[in-house]
Length: 203
Image 1 (cartoon, helix red, strand yellow):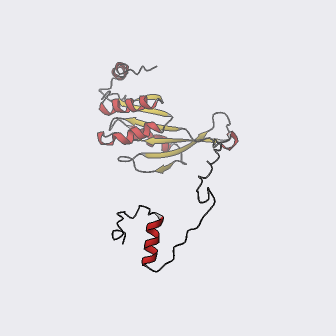
Image 2 (tube, one colour):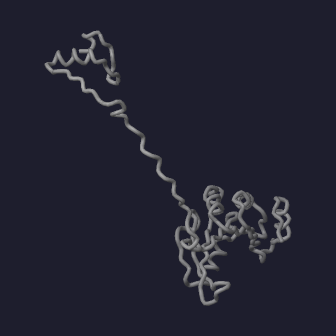
Image 3 (cartoon, helix red, strand yellow):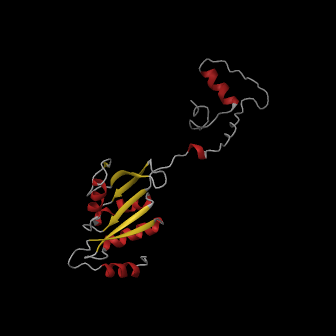
């Protein structure tokens, strides 16, 4: 219809008053012009929402259990170490798998200051296999302390170095646990030197 009136427009374009009158006349409608006050019909943007202070109040905060992540090369004794910790506490609770997942365990120990109370500690067991690098990185990023397990007979291995790198990148405290010291080929001093060569000085 618009093309017949010599108007070339798409559906998103507006038409002038004269064209609108012709269209109305063609279909038997009466065209009326409604006048309104200046500024009427203008849509004003809503006011900006008031920013509120969303910080938590100190009295509303609750202490969370510290998180300790066990990391190291495959078959260096990470899960065995955790098994000993879990068996020493009958209240230990397990969540998740061990070999191919991050295992999470919560144990309760006597509170260091309030002897009548118990304090919880959460342990994470990360897989040591090379295929699970991203899991180890996540474990390092959510922890407070990393326990780096190194077998005294094998020394520093590829996943040991990778776990060390994750812990250093996350800037968390680290404890080195030299394991399998009863092995015939154990050499704890070699482990200490290897770690020192990688920038980790053991006390």
